Image (tube, rainbow, N blue to C red; front, side, top):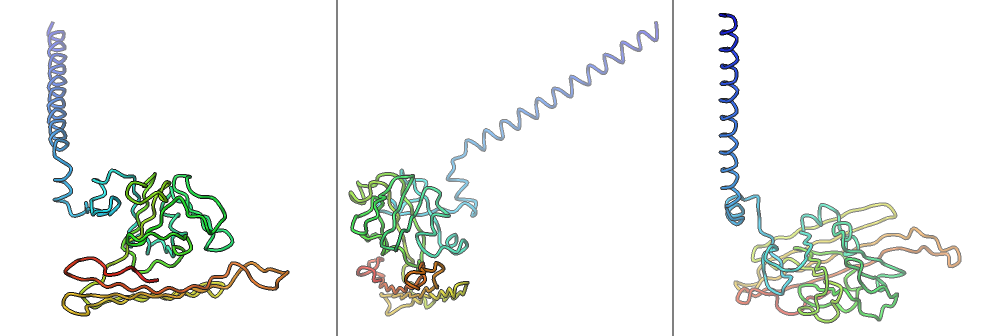
Length: 266
């Protein structure tokens, strides 16, 4: 009888301990669920405001400065840091960072086709305006050849997907590629870049900016890009696919207006 009673007491104690552990685990789970519910109830703006790692991306996709989250448009933004890190030379190379963008260059830079989400103008005709609108600081470029150039002092590149005819005109029925450059600064500064590669590839470019007066600042950028061809034309005795181009760009900023004065020069 003692052994039987002792066995029942041991089983009762074991059941009691198991029940206590189960209740403790259940109470801990309820406390964790309540904590996560309180965290989820906090607005997203609070987290972005307190944590410096969550920065705001300002775009002008709707013809005014807005954060990327507030713009009701499908936009892919490529910053200057990403362009420099990926060694992006021109708009043609940008397709490696923007999956929805495809750029086809045919026999010359004047015959370049742009496609966004598979839509664009595929005609091999330099006189036909593309279905993808090309803009530099809000100025429309009617010929795609004017966009196939090195990217000087770029702040960001915005690729707007889908028809944008309401804000950008009827020539943007497939999308928009908007290039935004750095504004002149009232502090003297600048940078210069040089590189050399195979086929005697030489790239030189730089920019300098500074104040002209208390209310006017200016910047000037320029570059040179040259490379020998790598396709031998045995009939003509020349090399094809060579590269030989240069660019120059100047801007003036009026502090009173906080916008560039005059159209960009290239």
